[in-house]
Amino acid sequence: MANPSDRLSPERRRMMRWRFYTLLSVLVTLLLHPAPAPAQATNTKSDGPKVGNAASVVVDADYKIGAQDVVRIDVWKEPDISRTIPVRPDGKISLPLLNDVQASGLTAMQLAGSIRDGLTKFLTNPQVTVTVTEINSRRVYVTGEVMRTGAIPLLPNMTVLQALASAGGFTQFAKLKDIYILRMENGQQVKYAFDYKEALKGKRPERNILLRPGDLIVVP
Image (cartoon, rainbow, N blue to C red; front, side, top):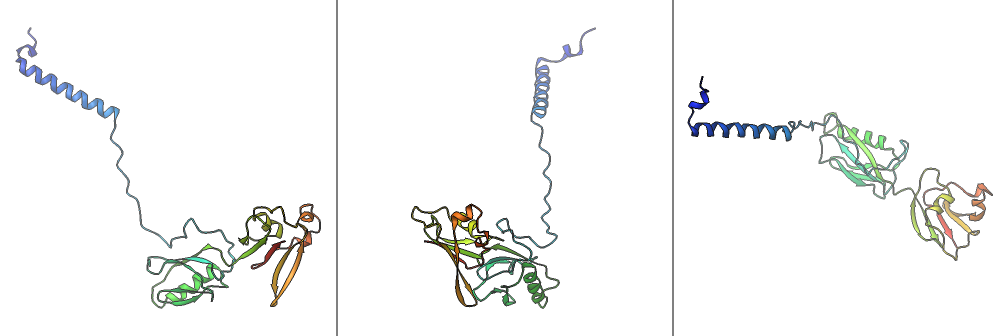
């Protein structure tokens, strides 16, 4: 019995072979390069107030904001009010609708509550987040025969020895036994002696005092 394909014309057989190889090529392409999975939609809806950015410093919850500190105010769904702003020397910040708001002396949570209370006159159930992004009010200063003079951020429980370690070392002329700290107490300047070499040996630890904002360390 004759094969049915023998009755096809040469042109018809060529067309069928072309379709076969085309289909085979498509199948091989799909196997080697599968189609990517459909992209999933990203939910951009926010469910609450935005938290401060990554540049925010880590501060204790009891930290009291001071003049020249920088705070981030986030009011949910109110971009015109949300902003990063420094605390003025008078201890206040300025915000739309509220004008001047006292910030110095308050914790971040207390300031958020104060702003929220003020905004309730203009907004329904405002949600406010306050983040301290820069601490500039708590600084001590190092001057004299050190590699880096100037202001140093005052960390919690920072001692004289720790502050000097942040100054980059001493010059060859530094008198390490005659270092002293100047501090304002009750409107008067008080001088505290510090012997660096003794401190390194653990002697007279009472002289390695805890620093306060505004202290000046002098290395003669």
